[in-house]
Length: 255
Image 1 (tube, one colour):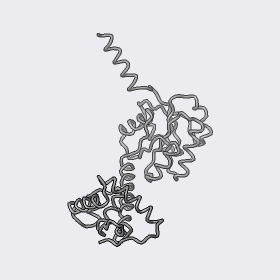
Image 2 (image 1 turned 45 degrees about the vertical axis):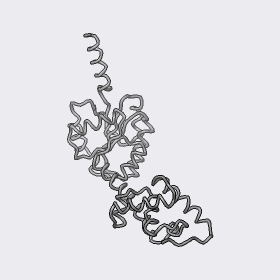
Image 3 (image 1 turned 30 degrees about the horizontal axis):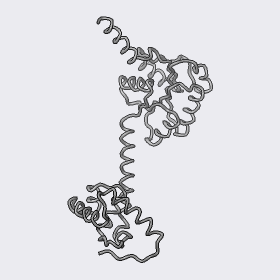
Image 4 (image 1 turned 180 degrees about the vertical axis):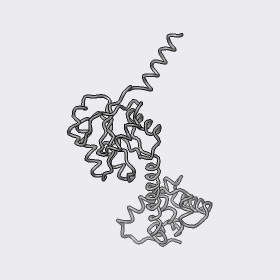
């Protein structure tokens, strides 16, 4: 029993701490900043290389070392960051690269990560949080601060909302309101929204009606197009619009 406990403790220790020391290379031309970062990393597993490296071509000596972390401490443009990361990874494919910057645009952060960057750490991070972020990167994770993540989520949400809202614009009179089954203009609006994947709440808010009213209209739509659910109705509408676009046959006006 005692041997099992010792064995498990050893395995957990290895799993939780896969590396004891990390060779850390600072890409930084600011002596004062280098001194500050050296003080921050003192006593941690991140052991700074004593040499100053400005040209990625001079980093070939680290190619065979495991593990290696590059800290890029230069305020640069996205294009410059991408070029630096690509050069670093070309000379040391197994190394990790993290940008330590005062500020970086969220979209730029995404572009540099797509080029091979492993993390973005703002200079405002607390020492303990920075160390943990670097440890996560060394474990194979990509780290970005919460502020960048939230900003990207807001941008994505706004973009999707704008796309859905734009689909409502031509709704007052359209092909769906002129179909043989005689959908009303409002039902045609709602059915077109369904093809965009809009929820009842979003449809109600955009059309300025109660959510209960939307539900009533959807029931009527399902009955008229002989669909079991809203998904079938949306699929039917998409097919109807495609066929009517290539069909010159006159349609019956809606109610």
